[in-house]
Length: 505
Image (tube, rainbow, N blue to C red; front, side):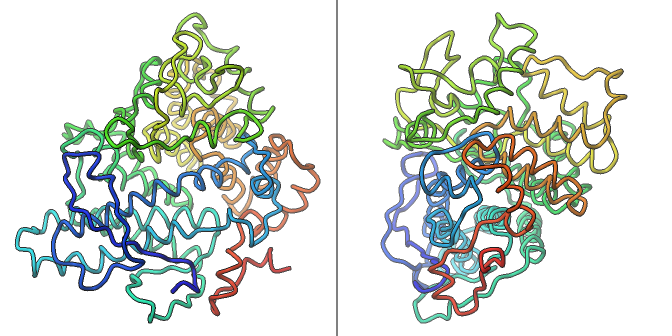
């Protein structure tokens, strides 16, 4: 097993209490595989699901770099990071390592296969509880495969757990189309159980564990990615129109400008759909994102000159500059002792008004929030010929940011291309540091038979400040150059695994 795609599985030996953040986030690794003799109680199922969440948190530094460094809004001076952002990746670069995602997938596979067997030995493991656990496992697996597709395009699609080293672990790549079909099937299977929860007992669990809202968001995401725009709109509406379906508890877009800050501090806001939680006070946990990933200095991720110029331009458009103005009022970056930090992971109030910084570095990492669902739907509306509807959605984001809305008269000058430009600009401004930008540009380059590929390359070149535009343009002519190479160690040890053709030249 150790010689293939680096799938490792840890057996969690804790019994979980759903009332304690400390207990839920506690993981005690013991073995590399979950033994077939392990599955005796619902607590053991919960422990393996917990291990999946733990590994999702471990994956966040890679998720951020994969989602940001090539997008032209942030850059790094680190030697390995610059290879990624400058499209100079080699298979031996540690940023090619997808092992943590496959750990999560193997946890999920183990739950999907073995949870139903637990009922034979635990008569308190009722169908509703088991199916709720399966929903969480299906989400974990599907989300990881979507991230893999967005970064590697083609990877092995592994649907069965590895339980011992005697198993044959050579696995060929599967096509992106087949992986996307499996992602959608996983979400549909989870939702078909009618056991995905709307809420949990504790607020942090409602936002920090998989709910039906997270499943809807994931389906909207993968449908947008695969240009299945009607399905994307359908699942966006399941979130955006939840108030019309009689739901009492559902994620809501925070329209008030000042409420924008609460999305990140204290976190787990009403706008959140799913976020990975840290809590220093309850569990003595810290992630040091603001120190290791986002100090605006040589040691971390920095805003590009292009991104700062865009931010300054937007700040100049703010209608009420004397008031708290959401993301535009120094909320994206804060200066502390002469060093700039990404406010989302460092601050606890408006930087230039309150001067507050977090006592502990335990900011959450948001995977999905309602603002993104609004803009996903806007993208889908544009691509189905509904420009006016798309602009109405964009205006919700602009209004919260204290920016003037696009008027009905101004709509007349908008077509598909400049509406997409506005949507992606708002996504860049809204989601700085949330690992979205690169995927938006890659989506733009891919859609409608690469219709906007040159436009996407133009955006990348404008933002990149560590290599020459000529190199980027010459590299990205090859559609496979937009993806990361498969890890060299896996190519060497997996006899069936074939490298991305761009990196085989």
